[in-house]
Image (cartoon, rainbow, N blue to C red; front, side):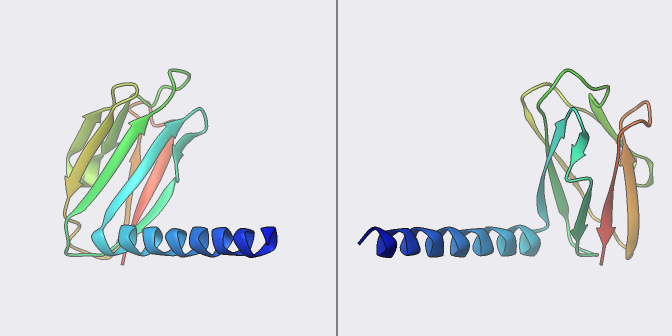
Length: 113
């Protein structure tokens, strides 16, 4: 009996994970956390020619990444501690857009396909 319940729970969790990943990819809306390791994930993939929203949440004070700077898109956005900040832009061409903290120590990239 427990095996059947456990199998159902695992199946639902896997299906939920697949659905969430597909939705994130399809909508060009990406969650990024700022941790002691920097931007997590440090690399995300989006579609060209469609608006992209990075939802960035700084979760620590033990980093200099208290803003996100993306020169190619004229973005210099403060990241208040514990608040989700939405950064929306539309990448027009395929390629890579680099971003970093203001001190250029913690880095990330948006891969545009």
